[in-house]
Image: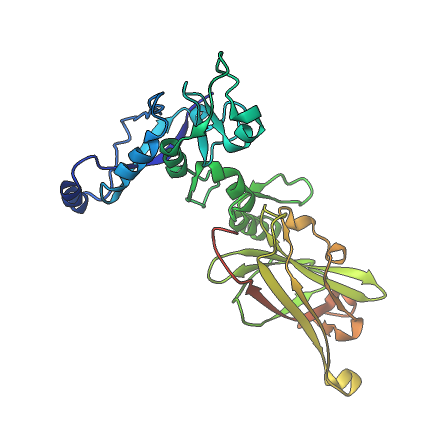
Length: 335
């Protein structure tokens, strides 16, 4: 198995006073690209499984943290029994064999099966816990640029806002981050783009003949796709989804959409409104408004003629008001 490039936190081995002086001059250690540094994980002494705590405590007393870019065989960061990434607590027997907490819990009396005499019992290994907790790798999604703790990579990939989405235009196989997908839809497929401000209502004139509109959050360029479709009997359905690959995660946005009825049409003010939690989709172009769990139903009398159009349903527009809010508590680490 190939080694994976990771970032591992290191600490100065000088005295505390000297470490403080050196860290003030050089708070971060950057290695030239021409040098490849390898780190070997050395198991604690076979008879001293309890010394790991002393190692961690001693390391934490050496002043400011310094980060070091290294290459390491990623098999060392995986449990040899279940092959899943190690996460604290990590266990080690007296012979040096390692196992994760989940595997140790399934072993009879916590005994190591790899030990020939059957006398190997697993104990916590704080030293390796420190290594596992401080080992980070860069997210591979373009535009993310975040370093994630190695054993949390899978969770991050399911929630990363830069995970790729697919264009569902017939014959188009484009795959890219949501922001790149928005540009692709606009330049290649002529889908209009509008900026919206979170927490404030935006008024849009959405043509019934143009079934999609890309909305961009003004402070984070988050991508939303508004869709328009026919329900029958002249009723129009309007819905909106967030473009992100983590479609299975909990909603991160709330959306309120409404259309006001012109008083001249019925002699009174009236409106249709929907207030919903926004769903996510990794293929937003495939979303059909009427197929969404929640959408806005707009009766034909609420439609207005397009500014410069002739007769016919294709020239009508939805005078839509939309407000998008971030759900609290908000954290970029969760989206």
